[in-house]
Each structure stands twice: as structure tokens, then as C-alpha cells.
Length: 208
Figure 1 (tube, rainbow, N blue to C red):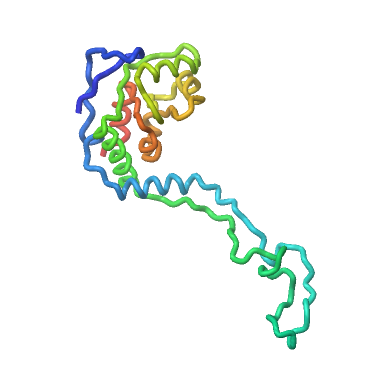
Figure 2: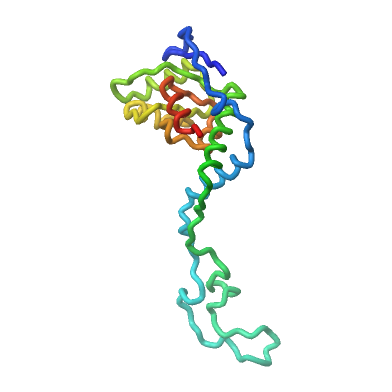
């Protein structure tokens, strides 16, 4: 698959790049995508939710009323969860939600997501450029020149501090290294903006 290379002004440079069919042209596997996104979201959970049980609250433990003869249920403590101010019955406890997936399955999910973007013509390739200093307004102008709307994912070949600092405060935009690409971020973006050098990094990272 060939994609035209644009410059910072959003005009064609006259050059094209070929996207590997092994990465950007596979038959997407929806179940692999589901599992990878599920894992990503589960791993983001802190799991610090907690409620107090009967052993942790401070209330009187005297017997409320006699055991028999009242015509009602038998109770022995105000800590019971059926009373206002009582303990939470089967409440949440701290736990770890993370789980592991096979590396091959995660790779399949990533290239499936990339293939969806390529199939839907949501990939924009821009020639490599440098920013001498962080400047958000310059990055906003770049996105406008590329005619990018909605959420965008800007991919750099390596860590570029100036580009990252310029794009991080723009709502709906994410700047990420090619090696850090994940299924969730690729699918969430409406447009995938790749610098020329990042393409080889993506293909190298996701090769078999």
C-alpha cells in the first residue's frame, strides 16, 4: 500500500512510502483486538476500592433485643449490614485487575488495528521535521495544515521532547513513540499521523 508523503504545510512532496502488507494489510482479528484492549484498560485500574466490613467499623456489639418472642428476625449487633450505619455486605476489596496475554496475540491485535486504519484511509504520512523549541501553536498549525479532525495520534520514531511538549496539551491529540504503540491508542484515534522514519520503526517492532 502506497501513501503520499506530505510536508509541514500539508502539501504533497511528490514522494510516496510503501506500507508493509505484513503490518498494515493483514486480515484484522477482532477477538485479538478485544482481548488486547480489555487488558490495557484492566491494567489501568488501580484496584484500591475498599469498604469496611463488620470487623472494621466501630459500633455497639450489645444484643439489640431478646432472642425470641419479638416476632422479628434475631439480631446480635448493630454492625449488621442491614442497619443504617452498619457494615457493607460483600463490599469491594483491594485487588489487582491486570492479566497477561501472549506476545504473539498482542502483536496480532496491534497489526489488526493498524490494518483497520490503513483500510479506512486514516493514515497520514508526514516528512521528518525538527522543532527547535516546544511551541503548541506551531503544532496546532501543523494539524490544521494536515486537515486532521477529531482525535489524532502523532507517532515519532524516537523520543522527541520538543514535539511531545508541543502536542501534549492539545485536546484530542496524543504524541507517542513508534515502539510504544498499542492497540487501544491506535483504535481511539480518528487519524494516525506517522513521520517517515517512524514507519520503519513500527515495522521493525511488529515484525514476526
